[in-house]
Length: 142
Image (spheres, rainbow, N blue to C red):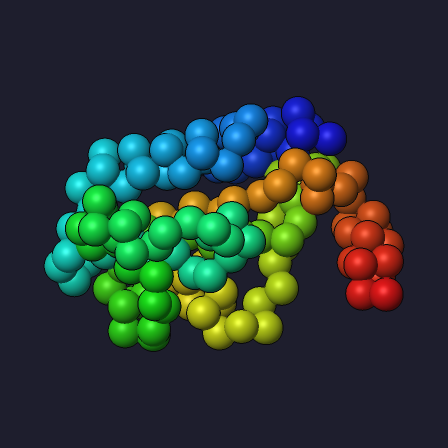
């Protein structure tokens, strides 16, 4: 499933990277933020919406290490952000798209307003197609 998801996402301009550990993913994201010159100024912020990958991460230390990285998502900060990071719930392999529960306003703001959106996806939540997503979501709801 992963290979199909990656191929389809890349056809429409997405970039897909796979990491073996949480630490590797965090290091990669930190490198992207530094490369994109994230800083503590409007138009240059990076926002990271609350997500499962942040469990156990010292976000204060991470924000200190990368000035301009913020973990409080507000409408104003999202509007002024260059990059936002969210953890999405599902990947759909046959279209290379992602889906997330956007009940929380922070998730919607962080996914929709920045110039660059980094979507984190666990490969075990990639499903074949939309009908499979409905089945997977229904079984998760139980």
